[in-house]
Structure formats: structure tokens, C-alpha cells
Image (cartoon, rainbow, N blue to C red; front, top):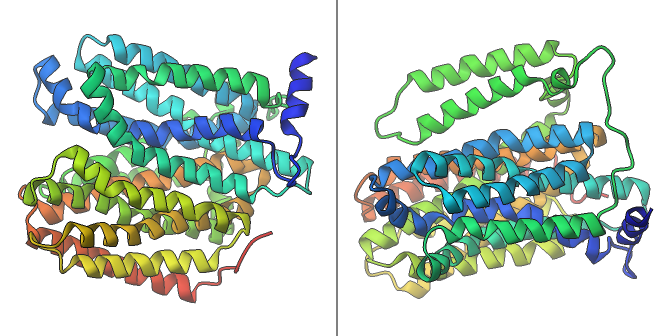
Length: 466
């Protein structure tokens, strides 16, 4: 009774007619854990390699394992939230994060550490899709609420924490050693659990069941396995485009075809391919956000590598140089999301990507740092406006009963953009990261941005959603 009363108080709107801060705060914490863990490990890789006496190349599994686990787990956690309730799944995810933090802190070897990263990928994957479900259901119960600002805050939380991950990781490693980048997840998860139990309303709907199916069958394990196999092949192929294994994309295509064939017949499909075929605007949203965010991910990875090797900058210096880009990205999300604007932000995002990419063609060893910083701010517009515009579209396009999986797939699309950007950076820069490689990457991004701008301009996108 007491928890229900607390839940009702948390769900009430504030004076501005928006969701109360107590409801929003734990959602922001949960949604931020995945982005921050994606970047916080970067400065810990060298100390980890020394600690376990392995090569730096071997530690790459710690990066790819979280990306892969997150890409598969985010729609999966959305699926679980649709079946068992978003608050329940949100809490389970936070529990997995705390467990992974403990395991990583005491890990005696690299395989155990990789297991902790997989658990982190799965646990943190529950934050965003369940948060979107909670907001959507609240808006369904109280239609007068204005949730645009809340959606913008969810997007901004991910952008800010991803940017802060690198300097935060560097500080933790410097003060307490590399194990601190895992330990920090424990108090964050525990605080999130306490806030969720006290401030987020209990799930009001009983776990849904499809007649004639078992609980395991409802989760469609075959569909999840085929989806995981497809994403794994794409990730492994993009990891080394300098020495491509063409069997991997062939396997990805075969697995994708098998996934579609299976999901068309499944009683409770993991991914409703029939809905995606009918809802082409939603499918285009997934493609658009993946292509849009591929550009700033290339800046984070490729420009960072060029600054380190050609300009001799340290990791901390580079992170501080790129930090304003991500801060600007987070700042522009909230005002546009409150007005639920779509077409203008997406056109601006593509145009900014094109302008920034063309400017990078002129970068060289003697380019002033102030000029480099100014150009990276342009990509901040791409990140922020591209994220908020596509998120606003998804919120309006996804069927309410499938918003969990749909939101998870949106994050998966961004993960795939990150994976593909790593491949493009590797292909363009190679092992030297000189000016020529940077210019090749910039021209490739300019071509992609021009195509994205053209498709966005001629596309029938609404000016805003309601």
C-alpha cells in the first residue's frame, strides 16, 4: 500500500504539466549507464593489459563484448518489459549492473573481466527501452502531460555521460586503478534501485501471456539467437576492414534472411518484421539514426586517433577537446524535444554533418587547436539534433504495445552505427592516422552526409509530432 502511494505521488505532474522530477531522475540514471560504460573503459585498457600480462589487442574483447551484448540485449530487454512490466525489468537490469560491477572489481583474469562486460551490456541495456515504456504508459494514462522535455532529457543523459566517460575513466584509473571503472557501477546501480523502488509507480498491468505458449516461447529464443548471430557477423566484419573476411557478411545476410523467415511465422516474434514492413517510416527512422550517428562516432574514434598520432595529444587532452561537442549535443536536445520538432532538427543535423566533414578535409598538423575545437562543435549539432529528432519520431511511430522493443532497436541502430564507424576509421586511417587518412575519412563522411541530407529534405517528414 505504501509503495503504491509513493508511486502515485511520483507519477503526478508538476506545476508545468510535466512528469515529476522524482519519476524522471531514476530513469535518467538507468538510461545513462550504458553510454557511460561504453566510453569509461578507454583509458583503462593499457593498465588492464599490463595487469593481466596480455597484449593491448587482446583487451579489445572488452570493448566489442559490451557493444555486442548491448546491441542484442536492448530490444530483448524491451521485449521482456512488454511481457513482465517495465519497472520489473528496469530493476533487474540495475541488479545485473551491480553484479557486473562487483565481478569486474574482483576479476582474476581477462575472461572473467569480459564476462563482467557482457553482464554490464545486458544490465545497462534495460535502462533506455524500459524508461521509454514508463513514459509512454504514463502519457497514455494522463494525456494532458507534456512528455517532450522528458524524452529530451533521456537523450541528453546518454550524450552527456558518453562524453564524460573518458575523463571520468581517466580520473578513476589515476586515483584508484583500473578496477575502479567497474566498481563505480555498484553505487550507481544501488542508488538507482532505491530511487526506483521509492519513486517509480509499480507496474499496473499483469505480465501478459499468449495462449498456447510457454514463458520461454513468448521470448522467441530462436529469433533472439538469429538476431545475435547477424549482429555478431556485422561486428566482426567491421572490426577489420583492412583484412576483410567476406564469409562474415555472407553469413550475416543468410542469418538475416533466416531471421525474417522465422519471425514471419513466429506466434510471438522477437522482432515484428510484418509491422516493420507495414510501418516504413519507423524502419526509415532506424536507418536514419544509424547513418546520422555514424558520423560523430567517426569523429570520436577517427579524429581522436589522428590527434594522438599526428599531433601527439594525450588521451585526457583529447577527451577535454571533444567534451564541448558532446555537451552542446546534450544542450540542444531539450528545447527541440519540448516542442517535439522533427523535420527542422533532422535537416540541420545532416547539414551540420556535411559542413563539418568538408571542413575536416583542410585539417593538417598545423591547424590551430581552436579551429579543430570549433569544427567538432558542428558535429555536436549532428549528434544532438539527430538523436532528438529520430527519438521523437520513434515515440510517435511505434505502436504502444511494442514501444519497448522499438526503443531497444533504436539504441541497437546507434550501436551498429558505432560498430560501422570503427570499421570505416580503420579502413581510412590504417595504422598511421596521418593527414591523408583523415582526409579520406572526411570525404567519405561528406558523401554519406550529402546523401543523408538529400533523403531527409525530400522525405515526407512531419514538422513536429503531437
